[in-house]
Length: 303
Image (tube, rainbow, N blue to C red; front, side, top):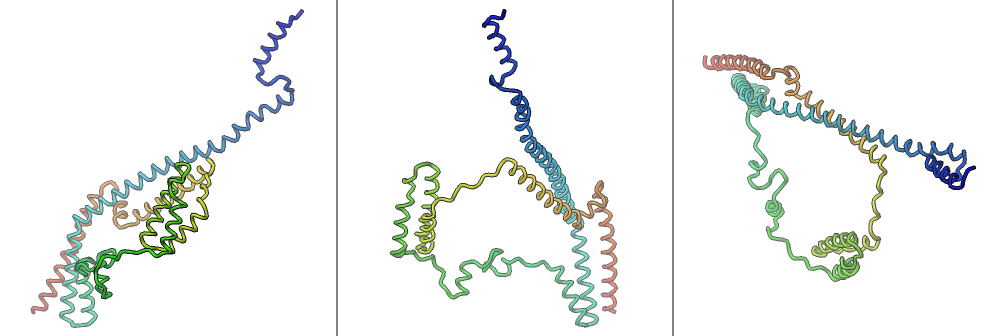
């Protein structure tokens, strides 16, 4: 015969094995796996997105490293190229100008004179803006003193502003309404501090129109809080940004590869120094040819 204690003990064991509330039927038992699987199924797309974002971030980092490495190589090679070959290019330009001038002096032809002027212009360095205008302007534009002189205005500090009666009224009204001491919490105090700072600037300028705009802004109330995207939306936005960044880096890499220095590096990636030596030999040969041609023209003029 089963005692109540044994029945109670059996009931405890049954509840321990099945933690569902008592009275749950078979239908509930069939629903449980679906309910347990539902959160897992909901989490899976987000987890996949997170893995995709991490993989894309890692790939982008590697791509950025490769592009930056190539950019540094191009810059270093360009500097070396300029140091070693720049004087030869300059010598070639000077010889071209002298040859063109010698031809123009012999023929007197207007077209030859134009070509000689162009060749000489390529040799002469372009003066900077500051050198051209001698303190009148810089790369940003005319200096204030120069503007005043060009418009026949005396150079003087700005006059003090005396706000109008309407500006004073608007200022007092805004100061009473928006004073930071009226704030109920720190966020509101910061908002009021920022707003009153703008009011003070407008009043110091006597800007009546801006004070009216600020009055309307305050009457409209605080800007509602920004909408915060969900985690999935943030991940999608991150993936989109990563894709755009990769496209930009691809363009940068393409421009580097298609540049003159980049193209030279691609021709001899393992031994760029040897390539410089070969280019230097070619330039020296061109210099010798130009010098012979110039000597021939000068010799003809003397004879």
